[in-house]
Length: 568
Image (cartoon, rainbow, N blue to C red; front, side, top):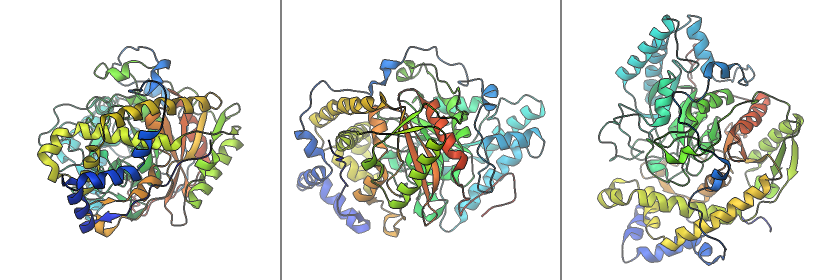
């Protein structure tokens, strides 16, 4: 079967044109006709007519390789023992400040967590006083942050820090509960009261001593991939503040990129960790479905949702993953999994590792993206990996099945909110939800039947290779259009380019990581994606660490540092 992934085409709309489009789509008399046209253009009509066999798969079938595990009590791993095995990036001027740098500074008495908290407060203020404002966080509480910092400083003074995350700044996507903040999910009407308790991953980070700096901006309800948010302001890309961060974990990626924190929590239903991490030049890991608890995350897209880290380095990503991963008694999906492991992620000899590349898919991206990603593949093969040409069938089916799945689930999750707050959503969100309400029950079931086929297609390839390599996105960060800042936009062409390589890992539940591999001619970052077998996160981290060793890193144009005086 030949490469079949089709570019998405539809007229772009923003501003007044977007308002008119929403009015037509939400009108009972005209909406059905326009919805049928848009659903047809996006591939839904074609999937209805595409024959398949077998029952639907209501969730990724990765659990065939899992087993019940006892719930964790505290952080997932022996973090102190882990630190010595973590791969360290090369020391260059462009390298960001890592969690280990903060801990060393505390241990050596060069600074304290209280000093860092005061500096974080200043960075947040300064970044939002810029023109344009960076808007990486939508909420932070000075008193809460200082209270956390005092407790951390007291632990260091007593010689009893909680581990290698104690006092390390971490931002949390506003899709997850964090006391004492409300959870708005990027809207202007949700989160009217503070969360009573932390989401499980936030609680694990807090128990490890992380300095939780605030709630990170996001694309409204996670239903877009640019980071445009008309309610809280668009998060800006630190490499070029006129450009998008990607989304939906927009503020999380930008906060790491500009130096506010070396680690942030993101969430990924269709690339929402990996896309902004790639466009902002950072590392992002979407683990196997069920590997990391979803408890305390907003209910949005149950069967494709993942929580995970965005971080400045592979080592920071591994450290955050080690804290987050493992079973949680409050999340049944997380109960069936093999023991998370990180053994061997610092081994640079890749002899015996087989990497699959489907070249028509790999090369379906901007020339600079393809070039940088091929250079990264060369670094992997130089380290001993074998590159194997493969074919992955029905990528267009995977794209459409994922789109139907995530839009149907998000529409269902917001049925009551839509009835009561339809006009409170941004216009681009209203379009997605209005289209979701036009999907039929048989569309969702048909998508799940094809989902099982897509899983088999990827499983067949991963029986022969250890990981599949692609670019993370089909393009680098697009410019933020002025006419979309207050309304959002509908731009299927850009959406398709950004999501081209991401959604398959959500539909199948397979783990995937993005690692920065360089920059285009405009100094905008490029990311390489590695997708592996279920529960093989440690291999993906190992491969990413090899790439990191020789990938160039540049400081972004907006860069703040805690441990030196440099700031831009």
